[in-house]
Length: 319
Image (tube, rainbow, N blue to C red):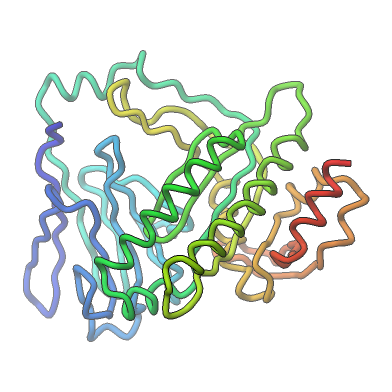
């Protein structure tokens, strides 16, 4: 499918540079020499700072990779993957990038913009964000080809079990997975949360098996954030290339909760909205922490759990 030419412009060391994305699914930015755009002399740039990634719909999304000083798009902080439109600018350290995407062929543009293909509604959802720990170190030890093989196998199996457990949509962003459960209107809200925790128990089992089968130099491990709330959901793509996703503050916070798991020293962190959906009997399994989530003004209470306690949690939810 023809989406026209896509590229970004940036000035590096006084030189105008253009990076063509037309045939490039991802563009990484950081100080690390393996990044597509290397900003090694900028002290405000992290080693793996940000990622521009093409989705199935042909849209490109900008993600901050947990950088120390953050990323902005059109002057606003990037707290979760955000779409890029022609003319958008984003700032990384002292460098300003401008994104360009020329119009596709007329017939393709019509197919993409057909209003009958796009249904966007606000719904109550619960979001799981799962991030592989020390992916950069693993990639350095295995090499890009081998680590891509490992991640493809993990994401393939993860996608299958998430779908079996009722996930409405999944997105794969670098080394992270975002999975969405839509709460049935008038239905039993905790049911979807139980399916999410069931997925986490099964993901732990999948990763343990892959660690055994693949003889990796270090075991795969992950952290996860879970949040619930209203979000805009729907097919942001077209009938031919569907791109089901959700956008809004509830989604942004799920990504920040995952990052907070490193701070609290537990693999799983729940936001207050999800914690409130749990039966009182299982809440003592969690520890409560006050953290300052990146991009939010006031500290918030979050609730953490180790992966070893997930089976007990699931058992309590099924009673």
